[in-house]
Length: 216
Image 1 (cartoon, one colour):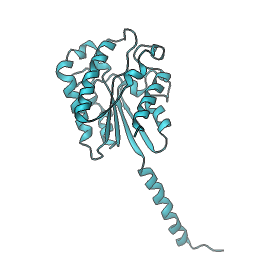
Image 2 (image 1 turned 90 degrees about the vertical axis):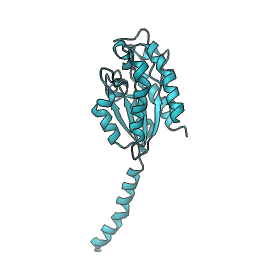
Image 3 (image 1 turned 120 degrees about the vertical axis):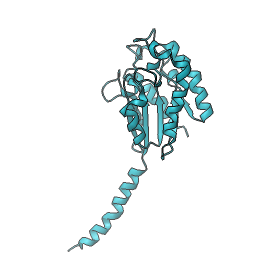
Image 4 (image 1 turned 45 degrees about the horizontal axis):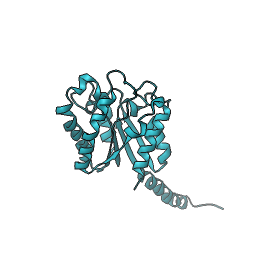
């Protein structure tokens, strides 16, 4: 039996459209952060965004825009907003943005400017995502708990000092908070170098993030 090639082409069209439609339905999640988001401390392929992708499944496209050493404040030694990762995060036209910055801001050389820069720079960062045509839903993470006395000048005291500022911003801008700090607090065994969570610690971050994203 000879099959008309035009009929084959016609039958293929709905399939192609269905595939493209399914792809278009995927929610793009932009993970904005420093080395903890990038995956330093966790095993290869086990960063919290990678683990979140496995939990969220095929309907989500989780993109990791973490960059080691970056600061929230533009007066910091390595501002996130001056990085390629920041530009790429904006270009991804995300549906959802999770921001987890502030750890490197606790270094004394950076934190000395917190009173005048921290809140303003956080609002500025948020505004760049709010201007996107995709109109993403934005989640602010309370910075991760720092174990013991910390390292490299990174410390838990100044990490905790960021919490009320972030809560204030979230309340005024009507954004949701993800309590990453509480998820890791006291879990010193999962933070071997006192700053970077290992694979197990990254799993706890992924768990609290995905729970927040899928709560409604």
